[in-house]
Image (cartoon, rainbow, N blue to C red):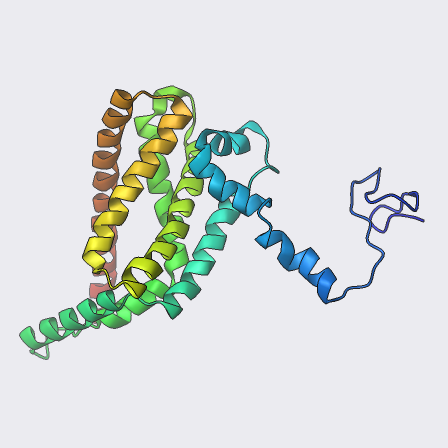
Length: 262
């Protein structure tokens, strides 16, 4: 018989083509076959997703270094990892909305509009803004990754990795944190009723600990070096983050003002 992928002949007992490596499949699709081919691999504990997810906790150096060293089949592709998380997050916030954010935004809207009741003052709708923000959550996730990458690149620039390699590192790390945040929100906020403020502080500490742990393992830092790097990382990241927020706010403010003038 011949391989359906490359037409190379193979023996009847062969499971993979000796020429192209494709799996030899002669059976018709069935419920069992569909599960094994499309759904089973994702839920398999040995697949790339779970190997990547747990590997970033158990041995982050191996995962972070694998892709840039050329071992690109061993773990989940970093940018596909981001897109998968962003897609799941969009649906997640549809089913588990952050009610406290919506309540705050609604209260802010009422307070602002009642204080500025003049017809010359434009009305705002923060609730609508937040709903729109969550609808495009995946794009904001993608926009934040370069900020993390620039931060770690500046802090660890003497370690020999360029900006694009740091882009890969942070794609893995922040995506893993994103998956953890979804689980923690359901358990702590939605199920146990923890306040969103407390949850945010808790997650901030988790973000700091996990990020510093990963870079400590990657660069073989001792505790003193790790703490020093952590302080620099936080100061630089929040400085860049606030600067970008201000820049975008000014840009949108100018665009909004121009729109009102027309």
